[in-house]
Image 1 (cartoon, rainbow, N blue to C red):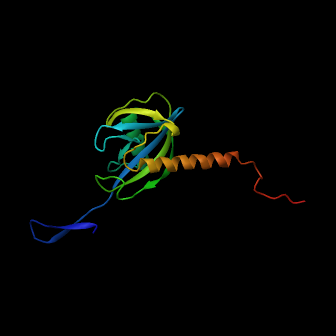
Image 2: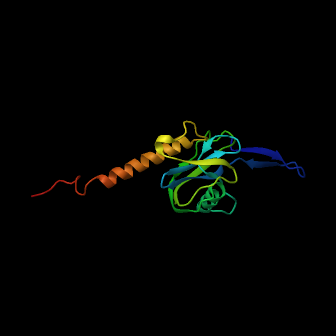
Length: 164
């Protein structure tokens, strides 16, 4: 059921209280030597992509820029959509829907806000355990990168037959 019924204390009528997923953003921040992951200060404890909840009246893109700055002290650019992740089990605390962006950044990241610490990881050095569904998100990201690299490496005209 997507709502519960409350009773109005004044008139006694039933009032629906809707339960909706919470919108969040996650950001894969690309630096020259890898991607930035934060070590979370709050439950669930562990390594995660920078991100957080979208504030009321805030666009998804603005939330991504704000969360990146708050947690990594980096200003991001070249924001690109990777995808949306909505499995109700992705966050044990509540049902969230995450819009995941990929972005570029330059500079030295510094942990702040909800981040206890942070580090830059290559694909080969990613932590074994990641919070939420971030392992799946990063698998999708690396699959996308591989597909892009393969499409760039394919010579022009290799898929067309020549006519004489």
